[in-house]
Length: 469
Image (cartoon, rainbow, N blue to C red; front, side, top):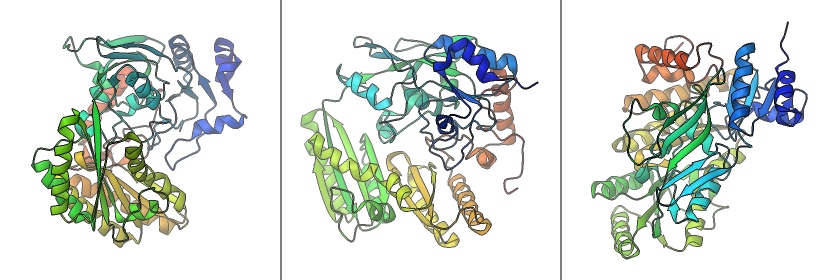
């Protein structure tokens, strides 16, 4: 007899918390920002409390129903897609910031709080939460924790994991745990927090998050440096880093990326612009002007064709606009876009860009590259105007992705810098990790979720297989 899990959850949580099959809204819970789907679930449970989350996990465990945790649905790798149906457990209604402690530099929040709104709230107290994913205007802090999100400021300040010091999590079956701490230091027991952060909702569902905060930097300045090609921009990166400069952001974009935002950006790019660096620094006001001068001199020496400094927040937002417009502009301009986020050692950025262009030529595809040059995290966007369902076109796209990952690993890089693995990259994991490492991760997953009902089919390939199978 088939279980009507929607009816069971409606009796426990109330009809207002459940989106049922047949509703137009339900299809939205079968999509995220990846090119996959839709995978409509049987129903979606819109939880408002830790008790409701635990109830959903208990009842689904009792009836053997798979559960897919979901934040804002902004993920790029299919991590929140209910590929086995069942229940989507959404934390989008858990939107309370529970505490901002200025003395202890701590924030306690529910997972559904939008990241940008959390940043604004803590900045109102003179504090600073550094992780800044590009989707901060609509992604949720719970999703950031699940994916270990990064962003441009990760070069100086690190990614989400560096700021999550405590968690309340609900496990499959309904048990709740508090792990981690609230103090600035703590080495009591194993670091379970680090294990949950970045586990992509496969271990448990976050219901409360304790974040470490920093004092807000007193001043911020920026330089936009435009170069004739990525080789010149890469040389500037090497020189700046070689001189010990640690900006809070160092963003790179290539010619294809620039061409897609020329008509939208308030900054008018020179016709010969082949790459740009967006370099942001922060600190005490008196120290920023000489630092801007040093950055400018290095960029000029490395063939920069235009330099523009900005200190006023409105001017900085205008320059950031060009960077943030790249991904949506690519998606708008082309029928199909694959967004990868490989990460290579900083010294290999130039070689990675060369190899990426070679892939584009070999597969007759357009590839735009931008990303966080300071930490080697490159967003490689493969775009296509042909029918990507056509077997020949699909084969070229698949070949391009496989070669991109092979080249990344060959350069001692990693398959994902911040988007995670999810479903999109799951079957490429064996390119980077050994069979033994993958098996130990499977065992770890089964420890938290023995029946593999929680976000099943994500992160780890189901079985070992040849890389080119």
